[in-house]
Image (cartoon, rainbow, N blue to C red):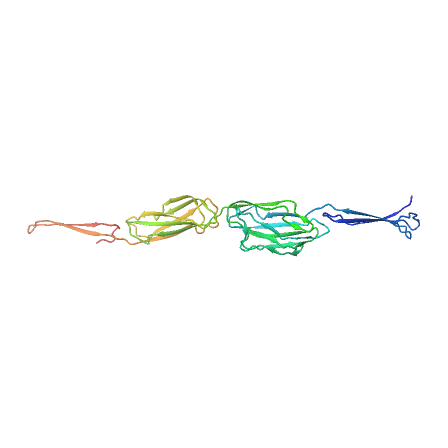
Length: 338
């Protein structure tokens, strides 16, 4: 049996549609004479070769997407990431049309005020369009994704409407020279309600002991969501806390007011302090503006009257009397009466 030296030259396997030529060359040892007269053999060296051409099965580019968090409060921001992978190991994937991800509209998803849209394809920055407040992100036509590499798009997005949304990229949305994406990809995001309730308090500026003073409490929902189960509490000047208002739902941008009355004790001589606050079962972005205080100063007013009753008829040398009656007709207590 002849000992033959086999030298095979085979191109690497590929994962997308590409013509691959495999060439095998057999060269006998120098001491062996090859008598094969086929045209594939070289008489001078005795080397024979064979060529095989193959068409590698198509493996198109793929698209995936995700949010940096599964949920976000209404008005908050989250990063949307889209990854476009070129599965072709031999050829770059060049976009033959702009690739666009259009966001859902119910609830509405938009780019943040500073979206920071970017794309890195392999190790090179690519051109993206992500307008602040816009409803999409796009990768430019002509973008090149290197063989066996990926293009990663990121953008900061937000939603002011509570609810569950699904961002979908349909099959065929990506068009390149090595094919289109054949599968639909989705990413889900839960937008939770968020509110900012604020309280303002207007009270009687100056009161009189023994008379009624009032406090007007105004609650405003600065949004972006509706506030559920809103409770307004007022602490009266005597320290007693009272629930003055309960609202099942207060829409974003809406406000409501309630008036509370209080009778100042007639003997009071100090400033009358009020406190009002609001609470909700809906998550709040801040509670710093939920509670507020105000004061009513006092100006005591008294109406002191005198009546006098004397002995109607007296006799010289005898005692007569006078009865003096002092009456405070209010409304305040009279101090230091002489």
